[in-house]
Image 1 (tube, helix red, strand yellow):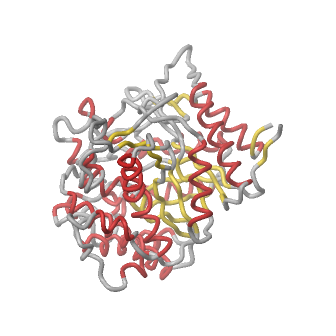
Image 2 (cartoon, rainbow, N blue to C red):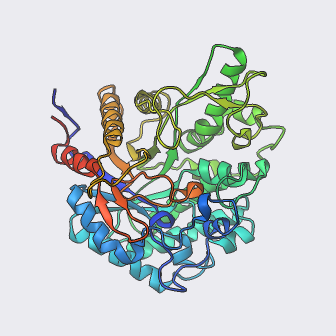
Length: 453
């Protein structure tokens, strides 16, 4: 049966600066927290770093051609704060301005709309040295940065995402230490979460003070369920949902922190970092909400259950395990597209109405090049299931207006280095040769049909 998405539905692909750009010419990018983190032995798998990555800085014309071949009408990429402001403050670096101007012009010349993410994990190291996201001043510096970026892009870019996945930046970066900057201070992680959201709100105001623009934030949202009916498992699921989803959704969409989450976290923090006016800024009306979806979570918290994941990702929790069943990706994540339908319908049911965009969705698999081809049928199956799940949510009433696949290219997958491949396009990191996978051709056909035949 033919299945079509609504007229005007946005189809795109996503990337992030540190994951694909490479450093570029000497001196063209300042040091970010990921440069520092990757230089520490044992922090990133195989000692990998983003010094070269996909060399998108030099190869962006080829990558824009790959986008054009996909037929997507939009490309979501991030600008590197440390490329545009080496110290995280002051005038923008002209070489950085020139690079992103060339990229934006190349996209517009081919009829591809640029969607610019202002912050995707790469805080300039000087700002981390001054306190990082746990420091309130970082949110103020980010607002200045957002205004400066919009100033030079205002006539060509009208879609901005302020902050990508503040959960990852705050809790993986400052609580568990799995991501840059690698700190393990749960109380600091909660301050970081608040200041990332405050940075979003202040950036939103700054952007709109320059010129009209469509702007929002991207949150990684996942359905959370108890692994069993045991009360300890149910309570763990409530707490994980609070720390994964509601700690970010409620301030942005309701202007408040969830009472149960604040209560759970009271031994760590009294939320005294929240100043008058903060929540009003954080909850200022947005034009859309971006959703990154990969997998559902089933959790257990029974006293005798051995933990399989670091509780430190979730401040205030002493024991926590995740239950994985069925098919999994190379990341070990469960494959369950129904969770995407549930996520989108939950947002529609439980929160004020707002246009939704899936700004990341995809899967890593152990791809192999055979005869010059990558026949990634498992990725096609994953994407097919999740797009059908997204359509089911639209049918159920979700105001979903677009879908961006993660990712255009295989790239630097944070602490996993280059060991995990999410791309529609295979990258040989030694030669930098690009090979569109079978999934790229499949996605092109979906985009052209605006659905499935």
